[in-house]
Length: 300
Image (cartoon, rainbow, N blue to C red; front, side):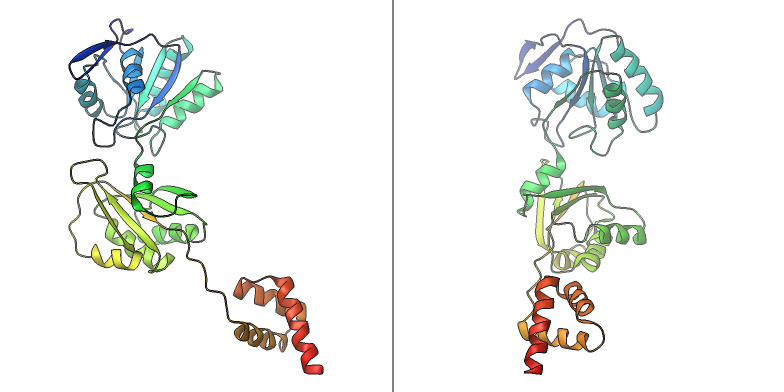
């Protein structure tokens, strides 16, 4: 555990800036997902001023600190030591110290163990302060060009094919744009599974190496993208974005009448209307009324 920070400073373009003192509490700081310029001034000041800086990989965080002249000694907090390291950090928080938490890239608590520390801090009545900034899912969402009024982030898809397909099927009818993290060596299999489970005509985008030198967006339908990546050697981190379910085409009136007449020959009018509602997505009440009209027409 590093000693209390006695010289909190950071540098921008060669200018050294003194960081103001921090109040005690847990600060969850978003860091760049690729381009080190995507850091906020507020984040730099807190990184420099915090009594303790906890991170997933000290080597990764050191690159950011060196870029901005921050003299902190990061404390490792990751999936493999979360229980023990979390207790150490919580003890520091309870003692009135300030703790800054960062992940390797992006916003903490998104697909990392940071939420456990946040939960413990909240349970102890300790202030938890988010310091927003870079986020891979949000960067992918706005760059994909798909509807963003509602979205669902599903983290990483399962590695095994059946579990992956089951997971995709669970999300099929969510009325929102879907976002998943994916590795380069599994993107082909995931696109193929998504095309089969969600529909190959559903719009999507493969967002790769976001904010980095070779940033790339490939857009198309799931079927098109599955073919594109079938034999391609892919590198880099990926966010797969899939548009919401396509609006079903309204069934033709003649087809609805034919279905009602067919079902009415096998079951009661109420059950026929209910079954027709399931198959067409139309209102049961309206279908029942239409069936009565059809029967009246036959009797007349």
